[in-house]
Length: 121
Image (cartoon, rainbow, N blue to C red):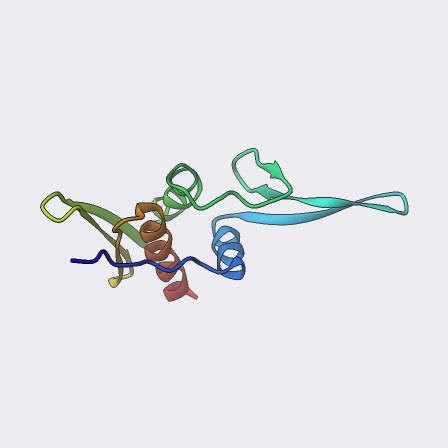
């Protein structure tokens, strides 16, 4: 039996996702010379030229707490040892978004949260 494939998000979807989680881009200029810009986060110290990668550490540091800080959202993670799958269920005001994360749990969590953010608009 083949494992399901979860598609990779586009650069635009990743940018949109992290902006929902409180990141913003600040361009820097020193005098008449542009020296580039950096991404910042509203509550955590984050001062980098690129957004964080989509991995479990960053999702649980920035995205999951953002969801759980509001009573509008809930998230549940279930594991199924028999078939080595993970089911992630995210809710926004009763609407359900879910992803089965086999083999990549980080992508499954990303897409479940992404869909909940989209429901909110």
